[in-house]
Image (cartoon, rainbow, N blue to C red; front, side):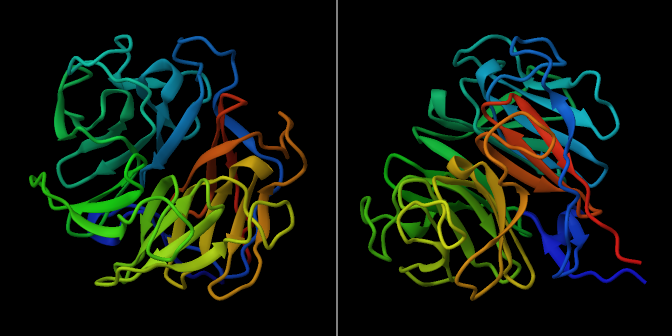
Length: 325
């Protein structure tokens, strides 16, 4: 029998998304498979340019924020030939059929829509999957967003890199509630410094990766200070350190999975541990199957396989999980 533990990557089971069973001792095959991009850096649908956040649906479809091409593309598992345009792709601009440097994307399965960080236009947009690539609508405006998450009630969480905070927004409400930071940029535990990505644990705790503080902090419901749960000891290359962390996910045992960007690796960090362990990359920067270069986004499919987007390699890598029989 296979041994597993639950993993919730940004969205909980009410949305029937990414309720994945992963063993606490799970390992991933170290040679990744390119499932998107790596065919040059132009704007054809078999290419990516500076991909950032990504989200993998329960059917194996990866939605990728193709930042340099100002679009969101969908890549179905097993199709390594070409992607499908699902938002933007009409040049950079502020029209409702355009995006400008999108950085993150999540899927709201309840109404089959994508929610997208569109920082070049200082907005968050919702894009219905029912009406093609011309149906964007503004959810939030005048916000320099970077990362997104959604919880089991449909609330969205947005990082604001201008004011160094994270807010939670109820569906249809543009007045957000502060859940992390909001006291200027800094190292104090009531502060954030360049919050990039966010994820939500099953208990409602909010986790934030901080690019300039080289740490991940955890913010419990109703508190105004965070807890350092990974990194936070300046930037560095040993396993006690992070360097410019980006995409994150958390499981039901509060194990964190972190795209450790400047160290070109993905780290698993057990709850309460002093240091992490490498689960992908960590073999120097490069384009080989066992290497990563500037990983920004990560997500898991329902089998526990790991997807990683790479800014510099213009690709998404898939690392299969070892099955324990």
